[in-house]
Image 1: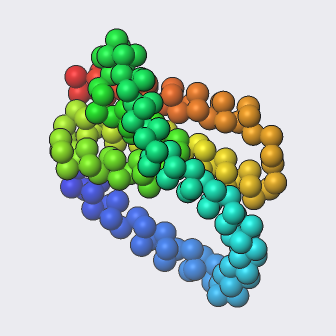
Image 2: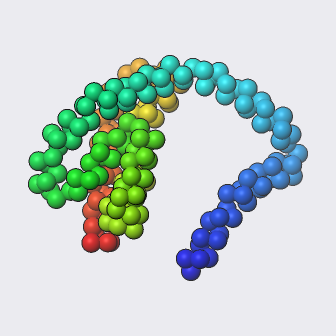
Image 3: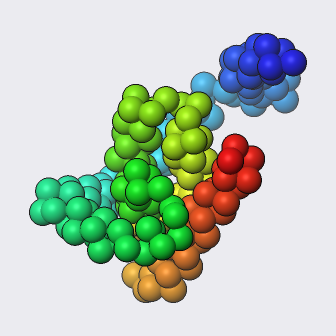
Length: 177
């Protein structure tokens, strides 16, 4: 069964990429012209996002390089010890709302250290899939449409990330022990 699902999953992306232009041709939509028109409309949006992305990347770098990440990890240590949450994934919990690439790199380091089928590998994978890069998403999307009052969205997004992390931990403990 696993082999069948794995085989089908490898075929899905090429099938979708082939289906879209074929369906557009069937509907008599000029595929290439529509693509280039969409790309032209996306370019000003991309230019508008650059200052927000640069600001976010600088903030993430400052957060890491100044030692603030390690400071918060040490601050959280007594709390996570009290509920028996694995310390090894705390940096992932802190990085995930800030940086998708940073958190993915951290998940990869957990895979290298403990293995992807270990408890920590499964927990890191589940946390990565159950949470979002809240601050990055708010920066990009709210920056694109010019929303400046983001306080409630930040609060709700970070609470949702916390819920996703705790739910991931609970489910991985229940399923894999």
